[in-house]
Structures are given as C-alpha cells and as structure tokens.
Image (spheres, rainbow, N blue to C red):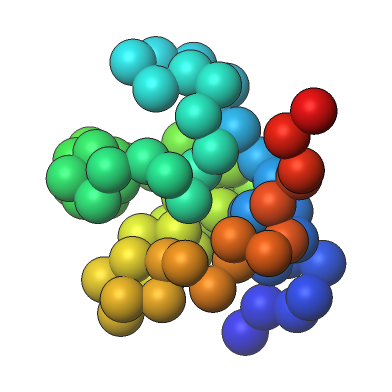
Length: 73
C-alpha cells in the first residue's frame, strides 16, 4: 500500500529524462507508462512512482492527485 507522503511525491515528481522530461509523472501518457511497464520501469523510487502512476491511470483515478501538485508560479 502507499501513504500520503508517497501520493504527494507522485503528484510533485517530474520525469527526469526522455521525451517527456520535465512533465509531472501523473501527466505522462498512459501509453508511455505502458511501454515502460513492458520494457521495465527504472529501478528505485522513480520506477515505483511510475508504476503507481500507471495503476492510478488504468483505474481512472489519475486526476485525484491534482490538488497535491505544486502550484505553478
């Protein structure tokens, strides 16, 4: 299971590399996350957060973290 801190981190973490560098993980296209699922998510915390993002998207819950995202300046 995951806790509040994990959900906040997921809402505020940006993709650190690749085509979608700088985009919040929860705003990554589902197809991109599915590609990573088949290729293999990165090791460590980033991979865990990406897998959680995919699980939330598949269940249609991807917008529930919007209030936790960092406000734009």
